Image (cartoon, rainbow, N blue to C red; front, side):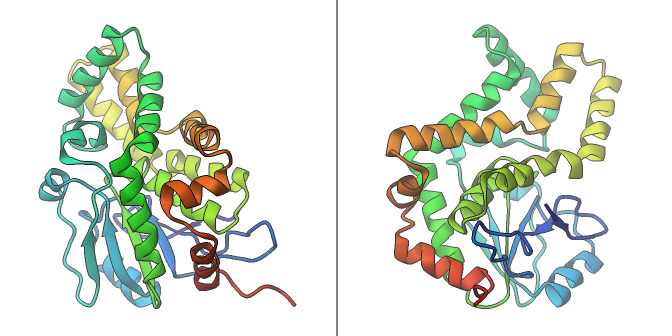
Length: 272
């Protein structure tokens, strides 16, 4: 699989979905669909690359109000920034992918250990809660509608680290575009490669503050993804709705007509 990482100075998990091949041999058009972590650290050169090279026209921010206040997106001339939180503010704690690692990790570990649940199982439960939440499903449904409104230029969606909320949303879009499941899983897991150095730096910093081995392991779980998380999502959808295709329509409003329109907008024309 050819993952199109965008080479930027300060943003390490920003990638173009262009070039992904669908099951019928079509390809996602380049410079149209971009997934990312937050844009707070973007350099001026990064912004110019996204706007002038990739044609960025819309940014969709999945973060909570608190996260936006802590690390606001830069204002980019000519680019619409849409605030579209995937989680309600009351669930902000489980989205702390970058800020307040030590305080959140302590709570994360206490919660996991008190219930005799491993940090990995706790994260897996978070994904299950995410896909079973009426609020979250509505927010992803609206996200799909926003993509259907993006007639020109590129749209970029991001959360904090670009791994959980973005990973879930991206997997739904790739499935709707008829990308095969192994490619979807590969794209989801690639966040571990692109954020490897950043995760290592955070682990080193936590170790310097005297963290225990359990805390170190917990933070690593928190900052990375595993295939089982996204598989949990798809297993739940298939069991609840009968099939993944039916879940697209019933849970996320992706009717056959909307799915066809999405494919017409973002895929190359089929080979005759």
